[in-house]
Image (tube, rainbow, N blue to C red):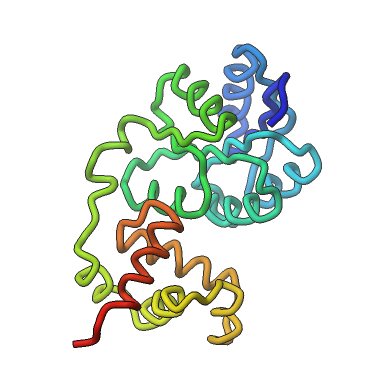
Length: 214
């Protein structure tokens, strides 16, 4: 990200919330709101049009969820960071947002200064989590054997394929499903196994793949 203004797109389905966020963000030094969006589709289109540095994304919206928008935004514009806002602070939401590429997770009751910290951290390539969701239990992980046993058959199949070195595209072709469906399963596998990122998931998949049978 270059020097100068930090360009932000706000996505929230409530007009008053967007107006409040715009006023707040523009009170911070060197932050400019370049666009607003009221739903996931508008966020994706607006991001392509305005090329913001960061998208501030609400998870709960009518129509497609913020999770779906997050995947599309990260796929379309890898350089654009996404900071998620949510009224939910449960670990599953946080893990899934991070699994799909979010650079931050801020709960809506956060102090205004926290939002500025989250945006600047994302711009610097760091991850920021609200204190309410960064407790140790967020990353508490079950024993892999127990976690894997809890996965549905399709997700165990995808995990095994990952362990064998197959890519999402290859797995989709092998199983006759879309790449998007594979990515959705991957996010759910990560949430179930407590993996913080794709690297942890791959390591676990390879470890399980290399484990002797029986």
